[in-house]
Length: 65
Image (cartoon, rainbow, N blue to C red; front, top):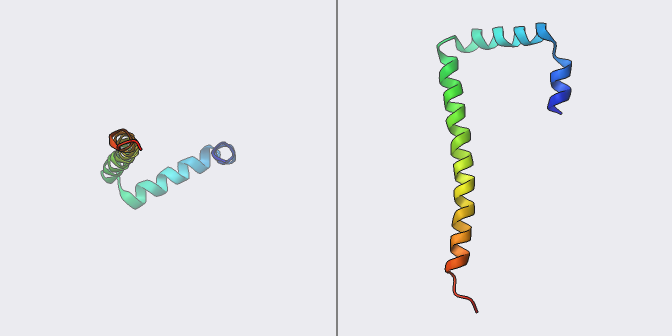
């Protein structure tokens, strides 16, 4: 789906999108938004990996019947 979307949007459309984002958020706010987005993704990945490790540890500590 993403590759189809990238094929539809040409150079002029991308420039327009970037200009609209700059107008909405301003030049100073964009790095803060990207930083927050990166931290959120990292936190999500860490949470997913942490949950998998906790499940494995819980299964190994339970007595076998």
